[in-house]
Amino acid sequence: LAVHRDPLDLFLADVTELPHDVEIVTGVACAHYSDPFALFPSERPPPAALRPRTAEGVQAIVVAANLRRASLWPISRGENLGYGGAAPASPTSVVLDLSRMNRILALDEADAFCLVEPGVSFTDLFERLKRDQMRLWVSAPGYGLGSLVGNALERGIGTGPAVDHASQVCGLEVVLGNGRMVRTGMGALPGSGMWQRRASGLGPRLDELFMQSSFGVVTKMGLWLMPEPEATAVVEAQFASFAALAGMVDCLAALARRNSALVAVVVSSYLVAAALLSRRSDWGSPRNPLNDATEARIRREFNLGWWCVTLRYFGGDASVDRGVTDGESAMEAMSPIRVDVSRWQSAHSEGCPHRTTPGSAGLANRLWCGELGAHIDFSVALPLAGPAVLRHALRVRAALSEIGLDYHSSFHLRERHVLNVVQILFDRSDPSVCAAVDRVFRWLIAEVATEGLGLYRAPLRFRAEAVAQYSFADHALADVHRSLKNALDPNNVLFLGKD
Ligand code: ADP
Image: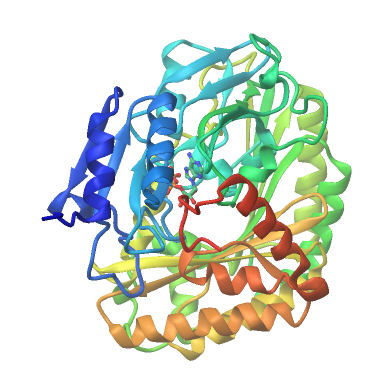
């Protein structure tokens, strides 16, 4: 009598037999791999998780998955909060948890780079640099407990000086969906010391292929770091009026375009700061939108304007000096409520106060809507032009206000565009609020697309809809992605549902 065995059991039995150190997680412990901020939490956690220790272990698991047609959902540390966390898109996927692979494999002070495994967090690298007294800095996002790899692959941004983390990636080791292992760029030269020193080899540069894609599992990543500068400065200015945003963006754009020491320019709504320091219930009924009087009261309480502009300077003494003079007078010319300047020079003191210490502080705002508060992030790339940025701000703010939610928004000005992250903070214990967020998020995706705008990073739940807007020539780009997927992961073992 043939005994029918569940394909998942057969796959897990195969993994047990592998000559590699792989922890297998099953049962209640799988609840760990959920999205703590899910709009509609799934009743079923993933059926299992695999925790390999080495790249060879990852490769063996992917090969086994191909033989059994199992479905794997790779994560690095699973802290992708606001975009889906650790939870797979499909309830049948087994999580491939790489957090035990947490070695810093190379750290080069002179050439300012590292080579890390997926489990290395921003905090891990920061602590290591401090411990070894290396004069290297790492740019970190607001929440630093996630991994360097997961964040860069998802095109995360940080406080700088290298704001855009994906742009600093130099060389990947990847296990493709078909089970082959590749090293990109100069890493394909056996024994090459060039892997993290030059981003391309001979031929196309493939690092990008593994960002926000579903073609492979990254098992090693090279990342350029920043040599500690001679000087840094931060100029912070508060502006009273919401409508001033357009003029501010145009003025800041001019500044950013002509000053190389100005490495990060961020404009954030006052609630970004206020939500770290208080809760919505401190100010009024959680069900109603904040009215003008309450908004003014919050700003008064924390001595904030409607917008806070933060200019970060980084470089040689003279160029930072020039930059700050420029920046300060540009801010003064826009009639701020207040301008604060803080400077640091390495020649005069150790321990730069402007160096970001990665940690969990940025997560404090999740409690804005109460103990079961959460956020989901609406992240759009905009032109570097004041009127377009103001129009977008008005649109998103109005849409959120209609469902009783507040506008927590940051604009990161880059050389030619602006990245806007709106953290939609909500109470996930209220199903009607969750349904409203779901509806508004979809509406916003469609709405910005009418202006030729799109999301640059999307929560997993809305990913397919956001990707579908990139539809030129009858979705030709999606067809290319599909061809690549078929070539590199023919049995579709990786990232089921991450279309
Ligand atoms: P973090 O480590 O910052 O918490 P996650 O582990 O949650 O980030 O990863 C975020 C997303 O990035 C995952 O859902 C997955 O799509 C992708 N990802 C993360 N790690 C890898 C990896 N090693 N290889 C390929 N894709 C990855």
